[in-house]
Length: 314
Image 1: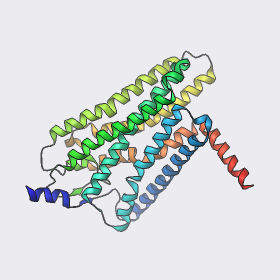
Image 2 (image 1 turned 90 degrees about the horizontal axis):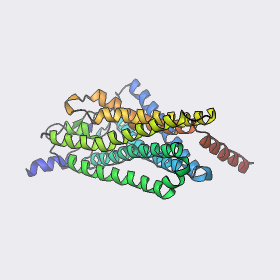
Image 3 (image 1 turned 60 degrees about the vertical axis):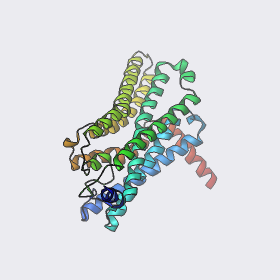
Image 4 (image 1 turned 135 degrees about the vertical axis):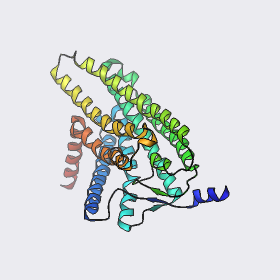
């Protein structure tokens, strides 16, 4: 028993990665690094605009700044290590490093799910109950919502990371993935994890199905309200805002739900990698683009910031 525990905690894992060691793999790595830099720059700019422009000091943009912060941390938790492993040819990751990556990834995934639901609630109140908006979505309530998203994400991550790291890993330590993720880790365990997978499904209900249901209900009510608005300009503004939010929601929740709510026997390494690319690499890049290009307030804040920079230079 002691030897088995020793092997579980002391031996490194091997990540097979996403890229083949050839010219196509190198080109794909360059593309991923470009996406990584765009995600970091786009989300950082969005956070600074929200911080600097007084007109963006609203609950909606406060929650959006947390979403951008989550995206920065999430993609930074995965891409740099993946690139480093490819360049150096060392695909090993320590037991502690793997656990830390799982822990951070679950925090960011969980927090983002709840933040998207909170943002949909904000839009619902703003469009369906505009007169009560200052009360129902006050500064204090938006802070509580953001804090709750992070706290629940941390609690969920702590439970699942602890359980997975205490599993005995016998035989091969090779993870057919580009980062440490629970579905890939479960395949390495030499004990039956069926009951634990039931626990994963329970978490998925709280972090995926319930928030997704809240989002659909919120936007259903928004659509109903918008269709009764006589002003075409107001309708266009509401549809523009909501459609951009829904694009993010379906891009994020779709692959994430399909990944975590399937039985382990239905998982294949190829599918898992493609799905993970969507919610770990592509979504963090697309979020600031969708929320800025489709948003007049953000574009106006960007123009003002650039104008002030040019005036200082002159």
